[in-house]
Image 1 (cartoon, rainbow, N blue to C red):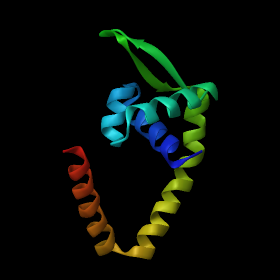
Image 2: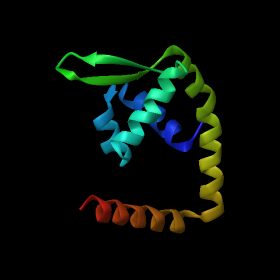
Image 3: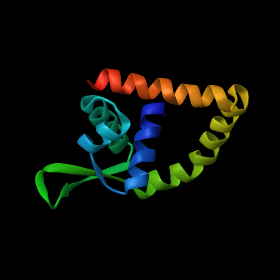
Length: 110
């Protein structure tokens, strides 16, 4: 699993059902890349697609039961990884990184 697919699954888990366009906005990632990742996850039965009752042209992505089970397994590992990075870098560097990433997101969004 790539970081992109993990982030996609984490975002879907948070929202329960979300469109590709909304995933792209939340993840600040190209919709085509999100679509390819979601299609790949669907081929592995980790997410499902269903129609959006409010917009017939839009599909919503949800975690499948298999995807939910995988997230239950992966979440503690990624949490430990994040805690290790935070311990290695320290609070100030992490804070500076957040500011820097926010500036980059703003720069590339303009």
